[in-house]
Image (tube, rainbow, N blue to C red; front, side, top):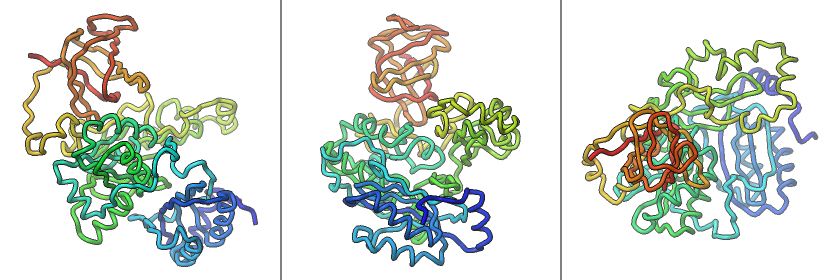
Length: 458
């Protein structure tokens, strides 16, 4: 048999509709030593294709990471195909809260170097020494502990539509970026704080929890089965959901609703919205949030330029795409200058704001009594250089100079204060920056494009 798809997504969708069978969407992962990943991949394809399994599966010498769908009638036959392998016997299968027969339209099984791109050298630490697994009830309880720091190990486009209240949500495009950032930010909390982490289905936290234990964190915990399993448990056990909004998923649904809260905005008009879409222009395919009104007005595109492109004859569209190296523009997740609104609403639930790390040594009760700071607006963040840890700001009004105490504020950054000891203005060393200047200086934390810069007044 052919070990690849022979039908297009459109043809597969028609076949699914004609079959008229309910399909289940599920995910799972397992770490194990696989001596021949290619043979393992081929065996899975042969076993799953007759069962009409569709999905995106990664296999590597370290295990398997799978998101897929299959006819509900074939569920037990499918379980038999995976339980023939010792390392997948009794494995947890995360079944989706919301079902969609078209969640996947192809069966893609790829051999990769790793089942999650984490950028870590596994030989340098014990990857099996993981954090304590917590079920939903236990997770809720530890979130109420004032000694808890909770970290979202998903990417920015995932956390912007839903997150646990009070979680640190790194503004990153990939999982590998978040590990060193969080490690650096939490250096002073290794001994006495509960480091609690979560992700979509749990696989990223398996590696992250082992990494942070290796880095010296004493109390490391992770949400068992991730948000998917949490949503299932709170529904079954009638528990309070401390997760608000939608859980981003990596299939055609692009999200499962957990609560009715809408915590994000349309990236084009700013209206409350948490519906992700991909720009219909095949040469762009940008992932972004778009409300119904903008979808109609923009014809499913992210910009007027893309609207112009989709009205060209197909051959002209292909000619535009041909030979152009778009790089990470294609499939880039929710970051583009063409999007007017791309950050969380400023008036979001304050419980969802990232806690100021400087205040984590205090109890939550004391943290609520932080006095107001007298400040003067200066400008906004325009870039961050991660290698040198330098922030760039556009000065829009007033002035700042070396020796001033500044406040940087943002929905993800929280509120961070520091004294300017050195700066560059318009690419030259200087002691003062005024309106219309571009100012850069070193920072001990990452800033975002939405962050505001203030001068703290006496």
